[in-house]
Image (tube, rainbow, N blue to C red; front, side, top):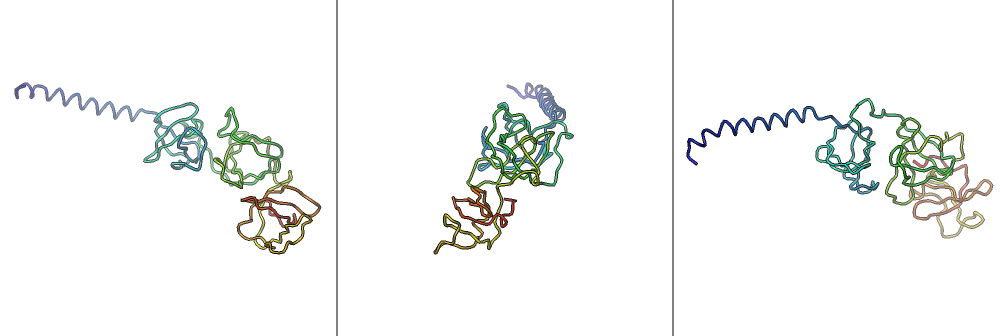
Length: 238
């Protein structure tokens, strides 16, 4: 191709390049904004596993939707990329859930826990007496933190308000023991020689397995069990 032919094509090439740039600009400008409805950990795949989260999105953070696998959505925010249920995304900033002061509630009957409000299948169930910390509210749903004794995949989820009661309206069966609390190992709640007689830092979080008069048989992380006086239990596992 001679120089004259190239020179004739340059204006056309420049025009096409400018058109592409302007098209991309106006597409980006008119593309609907997508925001995160609340602070939440992303997931590495389409399953609820907080242990391998690639990062966390804060409430109101603008994200880019990469692909959708309903009900899951792959999103990108800066250098962070991961999955979350589409329920957590909104195009209206008025839908962003406001902050609340966290408070404790007690599960009053077996309660299904969901990854998001309206999900078809629960991710786990909570037993009566379980103490949860409410961190968000959405209509009749409560986003709760769950006290755990092993290493589950999910430590938070949504529970319908109907399954929860105020701490003074239900019997909590979960709490923690202050350091120095007297503990008893024998079947009749007696001191056993060679065993610790006071709680140390490793034994704080417990749930009640059995009650006998003023005593409670409690279980903690790692399968630790002992008898304690119920009066010594602080019914707040957090």
